[in-house]
Image (cartoon, rainbow, N blue to C red):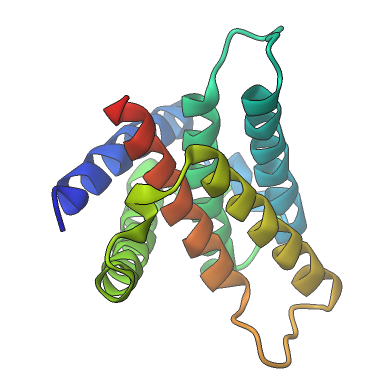
Length: 179
């Protein structure tokens, strides 16, 4: 598996570092966000990435990298919200939030390793734009599941979609780092 595990960990370290810094600035204010609000935040970031990939002119001096990092962190927040539930007031210390963050990353990384084994690292031959489109597709699926009150008949749940989005965003960042 080439250096996938090390590359994955390096991306996660960057994302986690930003998460911890933002926890220091804002605390766990994100804990009041309901899942649809987090989904919409992720959607905004994915739409911006797609716009950056399609448009020649940029009016804001931030590129794809910061948006993919945002997608990863918001997805992890959503997974924590799924596990712990939404609260009315911030309730997590930086240490507790970091521990929950690391737990979700470990579960998501294991999923990546399992799928990578079965798919033979096919993502390495994909374009960043395709990974962006897959994230947007997963977001539309999550929105539909949310509109169905979280119920699915035969499909995987919201958590699996957030995990896939994390992995796609990490793959995109690995690609961007290799350019």
